[in-house]
Length: 265
Image 1 (tube, helix red, strand yellow):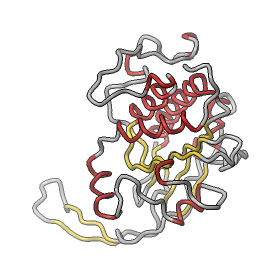
Image 2 (cartoon, one colour):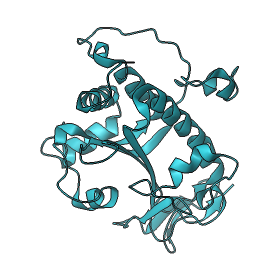
Image 3 (cartoon, helix red, strand yellow):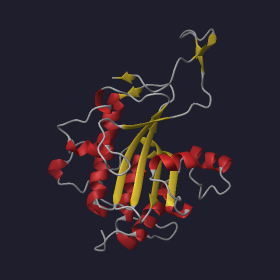
Image 4 (cartoon, one colour):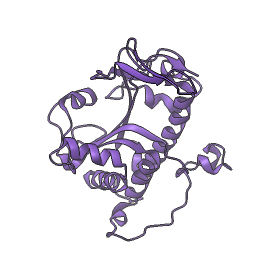
């Protein structure tokens, strides 16, 4: 880690790494289909107003927007960029190996003997949408918004509890590497209608203050439940399904009401 305080150069390195690690085909394809400049897509007014305090969006080169972003990539971008200018590597150069260990004291590690609990894991766990940008007007100028979305499937509490632990470890690690006063983390749920109202979605765990960052608004103000916003449906009112396991017949049925509001697990 550099001895210098994090600044715009740090933000540029993080965003550069986020771009370099993005190997999600559907994200590249959607940007090709919808953006005149896929490498620097412009954020929509609706999303910008949702996750910011307004004003003019930053230069597209200082903002990163990507769908289905792997948590391995997020961890690596933050950890590698925090190594200061030595993170600027020429093309086709291998960097590492790096220890696959959290920066936390080992007594704070979860399941220390379990390789799957280390930073880089053998899975493709992701966040539905990741938005990162730098804005010097904020007390914490690097903004990192993680968005999970449902249309008509249900919110799964067990899946959320697993993901919140890993995201919190990544945040705690980045706070030590980059300093916690540089990055503002926010977590947002999007679904049609109301958000989930039971279990860990609605209530903080009083025994785990580590998760409080998940229950904050855009300025870090505390919230009772997770931040939820309505996701407008622009289709998807009908479901196609088989009538039985034998798949001899299939049918079309209407989907009732909004989506993502019932809780499983």
